[in-house]
Image (cartoon, rainbow, N blue to C red; front, side):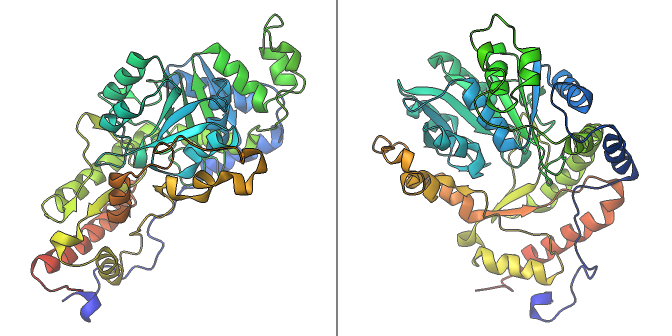
Length: 417
């Protein structure tokens, strides 16, 4: 009998069942070591240099630049490309708002593209949206499952537009064996607390384009770093002391933590992939559930997000989740921060909040267009954490037991609205 109907719950262990990041003794030692060195770095030295070098080497990029957030990392790339009010950038409609938020701040028009079955930017819709004003496409590898990078890259190359990757969910993920973050002119990662590589807060840019690197530095790394790294013959060297007026530097303690965490990334992904495969096997047999499609990809499994079809199941998503909660599966989540961002006031009416954008009006049907698949994905998505340690095997087993118990009850007609 379902716990919702008075039966015993599958899992009685009190929560939380998933804690991230995992702070080990090695993490504490790394942060304490940095405390003894310095808590402010003005140039490209110390832990900044160490982490940037390691990350750039891992990604096969010429340059890396740490920032105070993933949002600032994207902001730096957009500034690095010199984007402005006459430009459009195509973004996925289903995303976290930070992917496209900095574009609004710069007065750039985001054009929201519909998504595919994984909530990623749909190449078919992208091909229809490119216009003479399109300067770039930014993809977000949602939930750590890579976008269709060969098709997206081909569209960008054919039209002569820049490809940017937001890899904030996708540290270490691969498309056809190739790391995400290596397909475009520049890529950004968040180092926020829930990310696979985390410093609590922080971000990092990689690029092999020197001009993007220089401009991204000037946007938020003023004075010592810019004066040391930018060639004195560069046309923008005269701005090295002040940069472009902003301070977006990372905190050394955050980067010390991220550098220690980074060394575990590939091991964590390998374990996450084993657990995700077990979720696939358990959930893939139910006709009212769509599991992530991962052909040609090696996801990083920031989360395992599947879709629930109430029309086939005969119950709504909220009741399904309520039944799972009753079984003790307290980490099940309906994600709402990731949503159709074109609905948000920041994008539909930016001028009301920021008077400098009162003139901001997108061409009809482009920025505020309807994206039905984005809304369908948002209305059907359910998120599971993906554990990263072998000792979590028993807990994963209990979650699978609870999921299958409720799904079997739906099939048997034992759960109805």
